[in-house]
Image (cartoon, rainbow, N blue to C red; front, side):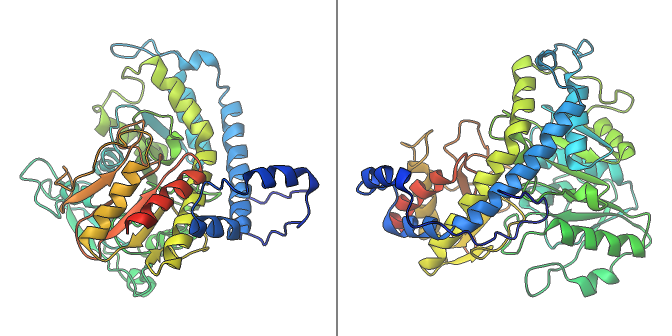
Length: 442
């Protein structure tokens, strides 16, 4: 009997019986037609216990999602869309917000197609908190590149960054091990520090992603110094990677993208903000306008169905992406490349970084991934400038939804240490196939 535990997965050892008569014929017929190159096949065979732990996590998170859908009484009528102002919407927005809030342990949530990226949703959350004279403190090192102009760390040319509105900014360096510097954080808050920003994922930094347990510890330290300081968590790539989410450990707001984890590879666009109701309402006012609230905005019916279906499938899709990170780490580490996270350690996001060391290998890796993609396999990714990014970036994203990183994809900035960041995949075997071409190309 399989016993399910919703605690952080430990990935127990799995013992496989050497003799399974019913499988013998199947194994024999496939023995000469293995789809993976030998290095990948060996790695996949060695990861059975890790994969079993991920399946346990998927079951726990799927149970939580199902319960939330049932409590929100989701029905097919909620898939109907709306036009114009969106006032005649059939209750889908309310049901989706209710289900999402319960899933992440928040008082309230706003899940909308009008958020066109995770950066957009995070920006609305930050502007909900901050006013002239306040300070924003980034406690996990430098934020993701696309937030630099939002904050004003990089010049936004007067287009309305937080700095333009008189918001001060400070960031705490990471500890030598790539995690939070707990000693520095203990004395970092000032009376005018209004918001602490915690980026859960590694972004484009060579560092560990943060577990929800670590985020909870940081929140306690922050609130002890300044109870009025609000905590905003950039939750991108972290949803459903553990059995709990940041609002369950005290985060005031979280924000992210629906073409990442919570969209389940199905949502075609959108983002979310969730947390304390007062601040969700304030973020909604930033998305729309003060006084309009959350009950406005048109959403086509096909998008509403995709939002519900994607959210329901998200735990399974995230589980496959996690398995993919295990496989990428195992294979690339065996070839002598530095990887982050290390092979076989529990994951806190769906990103696997591989340090390639030079521009040519980074380009070759991304070109191989593009060749192995279902969409645009005949194209060659080219590094270039992208809005919001400080460095040249190369993207390999042969995805059905443009820019979807819940689907198999990889990217990286053309700068030291020339690391590629791999994420997504509707099934881990996609990465198994891709890695064969990657190994031939490096």
